[in-house]
Length: 280
Length: 261
Image (cartoon, rainbow over all chains, first blue to last red; front, side, top):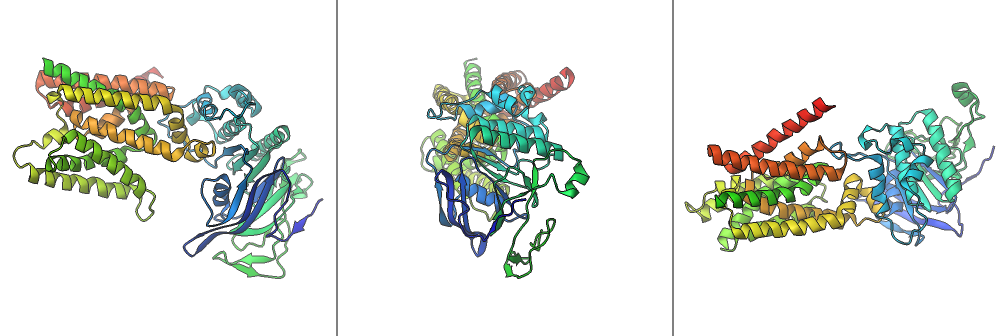
């Protein structure tokens, strides 16, 4: 069991192949601090999972890293040729728009610039994510898990150097989660792309994750996840199947009160299933 | 019979323009937005009368200005968008009605603007409509894929490098132009119907976005023909007859969908 802890506010890694670097990012609206002094580096081949309670600013941070919005302080450095494949949290399509899966995927092809040579076909991308049989299905008739797989195929079509996924397994059952995580980790191995993922669960993350970052306005703690498949509670629940899930143990040196304010505390290190956030 | 042929040409031209724009209005839930532009164009009529410039030009300019103002105002967060649109839509309709009746007491028939005046179509109108149809057709053809991409998901489109803001502005510009020429056909009060009813009817018959635009164009043209025929035969008001025909075709397409499946 690997345990690696460090205090926050240090850059997580300083690889020369950094795809994206956030340097002291803050976002302040009026007197409300949404994000404070965030430092994140994502490198090629690295999987970073972002966890945190509701309202912690995970999606806000993701939007800033993606360049969809700007921070009020700090800088974002994006590798100039970094191609991003993005999988939004929810794809709310208007049922009035008739759109088959392959037509939906064809929308990405024509927005590719000429620089990108190694494009793969829609057919291949869908086969890769295991939903090739849905090619002619209307997007409105897909289940939650199928939509995630189609979105993943769409992200793959861009042959990304950085894959960004916002709660990719939310609303998917535990088996489906397992499969999706396996798929994401395989894709990372194939493309050697960086992966930035927001997890909906505070304690269960993808096993292949290299770095877990716990966010609650600021970076509370970060480190490596531990393998979950050997955890007795997991075995009891799901049997002895190989697992792509892992637990993450939080190491906080402070608490948050109901308003999210930081309260310094000495004895906050607790067991696996409990975290020191007051509002978890 | 010449006036009927002119009316038919004008109506078909507007139906062709309205098909793709109507589809986008349905897909992006812009119906209320279209209504607001249409109502505000009555202010354009008033200013056209006041400044004694071409009323068609005044309507076009005012539609474009309101479209730009609305895009800017939509970024504020004090009012929900539908409330904002409701305020602008109905105040501009009210003020427009007051101004038009003050400046033009007795001379101008208000219903021409409220319900359309397709039967008085002249050569200039036809040329204007088809010129705009060509411009809009070319723009839609050129930017079809990025426009669809922002319709599906703006954040995803932006990450993938689509110029989202410019595409949205382009769409609103085309919508404003469409509304400005459609006023002649069905009037301020019924324009949104001409945009959304053929598109909504086409949805039941289509499997792709392109098909939906195609069917919307056919249904729109049919509505114009049916409405004009009814107007000629039974002397019903032309604009409302066109919209009523579109509604009939909508129900028909709903039934086709239900009983063919």
